Image (cartoon, rainbow, N blue to C red; front, side):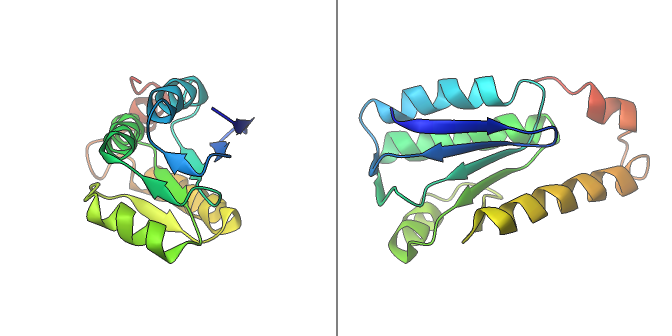
Length: 135
């Protein structure tokens, strides 16, 4: 699988450089996502070069989404391809965030973290819960 991984303090960015999220790519993507989520619970997946996915690809995206949510993080897919957006929406991945640009996705990560910080204690979560969430 051809990709780049850029880990920051608050998020990891995986830039997938494959035209199809299927065949052997989803399994490799899951491994990369698990590695990227160590130390951060927010993941941005840039799919701008990807134009199609199969059911296995959708299943892995659903799994990555759950991994992020379980850690009180956010999973964001970036694509400017309207056909790909339709395919992602048809996959019915609960609460999947889709943005057109990486910059918008980064802003959404920061907003998500702020909401978690301001909401700490009000919804049953403390900052300690957020910092020590299980992967």
